[in-house]
Image 1 (spheres, rainbow, N blue to C red):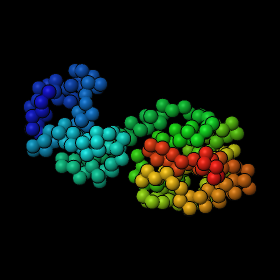
Image 2: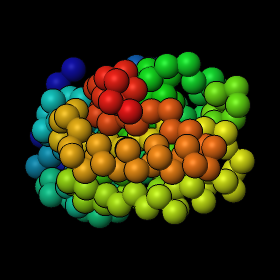
Image 3: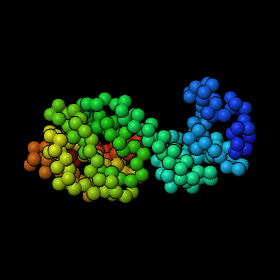
Image 4: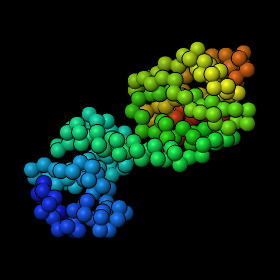
Length: 231
């Protein structure tokens, strides 16, 4: 199928227009570019909406996970994408992320660091800045809830022990796991990470809310303080 370099989708054969194609053949028949074209609705004078979508996808290596990392400002830099279209793309990708989150078991049991990492994927994947979270658990190591403590810049965030243990006490947690992400993908803990972990572990011991682990999260892997024997 060859697309004309006209911004007017109405000039295409009906079965080639993304909306009509979806109606005729079903959503699975559409390419990712065609699905994005439906979101942005129109192209430019010399580019169709599908052409614009292909350019955006090419910029992220045709990787939807990378596309989800783009902000409204990032998307608005593409020709033919204004703020409203960028918002539509971001909103659609966020709905997809939340759908994945709702498909997960409501009361997961944490038996190892991998379980904790998997539990936090919906919350920390694709984040362009650092965030600090705690995973609160009951005596059976079942997840009560994940709680975001803070969000910061690309190289750090604040984790206030008072806020952390206030959340744990309010939710009647029996234990917790600390988690923060490194958007850079670097899994090496900083000295500040080590000092904070030691401080929170000592506080947890005093309050009888033990800190079981601290994970450094990246989109592809993680570092576990417990697994490495430095908790």
